[in-house]
Image (tube, rainbow over all chains, first blue to last red; front, side, top):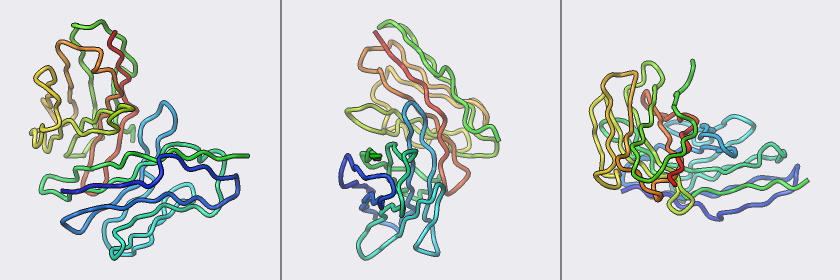
Length: 115
Length: 111
C-alpha cells in the first residue's frame, strides 16, 4: 500500500528565502508522485508531477521537485518565496492501478511567507 | 477547458435532510473521484469510477453515503440522512491517465 509523509505541518519562511517542503513516500511499485497547492477556500491545483524520465520536475509558479528513489523522497523547492505562495501544499502518491491513478495524500504543509 | 465543475459550492442543511452533490468531470477524462476533506482527517478518497463503473468504494464511510455516475459527464454523491459529522468539503476530481484534476469543492455544513 502507498503512503505519504510530509515533514512539518507548518513551514514559515521570509519573502525571498528558499522554500523547502519535505515529502517521503512508500510504494510497492514505481510511483507516480504529485504536488498540489490549495489556497484558502479553493480546490486543489496541480503544481507538478513525476511519472517517468527526468527526476527533476519543474512546475508552475517557479516550483520544482526532485524524485530521489534511494531516499524515497520528493521534496518541493522554490528558490525565492513570494507572498502569494502562502497556501497549503499536499504531496501525493499514485498506486498506478489498472483503472487509473488513485491518489494517496499526505497530511499537508501550510506555508507561511513573512514580509 | 472549463475544468471539473461542482455544485452546489456551499450548502447548509439540517440534520436528517438529504444532500446531493453534483459533479461534471472534464470531457474525455475516464476516471472520476470523490474526496472528502476535513481538518481532523485530511483528504480522504471516498469512491472512484472508471468508465462510469465504480471501482473502489471502500472509502465510503457508511451506508448513508452513495454515489452514482450515470454517464461520462455527470456524477452525484448523496448523503441520506445527513449528520453534523458529515460537515466537510467534498471534492470531485477527474483524470485522463497520469494526473488528477480537482474541482473547487462543495462546502457542506450540517446543523
